[in-house]
Length: 241
Ligand SMILES: Nc1ncnc2c1ncn2[C@@H]1O[C@H](COP(=O)(O)OP(=O)(O)O)[C@@H](O)[C@H]1O
Ligand SMILES: [Mg+2]
Image 1 (cartoon, rainbow, N blue to C red):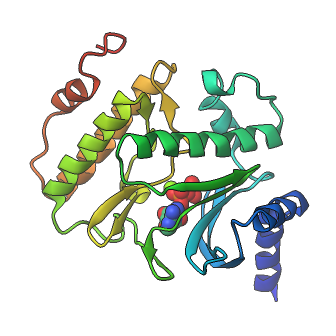
Image 2 (image 1 turned 60 degrees about the horizontal axis):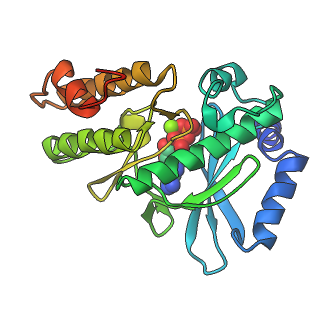
């Protein structure tokens, strides 16, 4: 009983009235036929598996409008020239955050990075390509480390570089935000990403590099030095050089 109550509380926190309306609109606009069930419950968002009207799986990321960590969001959005006009209300910040995630995803895809293709965005709900087989989501690289970590390291460092060339720093790179889809890496979770020139961009880029090198070291790879990787990524960029 207590457990059911707890579940209902979570349900209400995610699917408040305005979010229900948003999902309904995405459905009547032809993006979501139905929702099958939760894939993940995170700090700021819940991810669901759904189906589109062709019975194809889709991933639906719902940012909670009431329980997100606004201070953290504000820190990574304030001063971003793409979001200069947002008001400092919870709702506006969360909606802007979802827009930021989809914009960052678009930049990453344009840079040639494997990441979920954005499909639709409305308010706090983001519909994207589902990474997985049939209805089974690809595991995170944390849960399923790559069989060929050396190759993965090359690919992921190349991804960081390609994104940076297009002006984007992911900002939250770790084995939790890389999916292992049949041994192919997919980057996810772009909400925290910032664009080059943003005050925190350099700090976040350094953190991304450190995190990824640390992880590959743990997997037994003889990793290049931080300095070498950093220089390679920001090559020719005088602002950071
Ligand atoms: N496009 C997707 N396809 C399949 N699974 C996904 C997709 N996006 C997210 N997930 C799953 O949901 C989890 C949380 O997503 P993520 O974007 O990292 O949100 P959070 O901000 O909660 O960490 C991921 O670890 C992954 O298991
Ligand atoms: Mg994540």
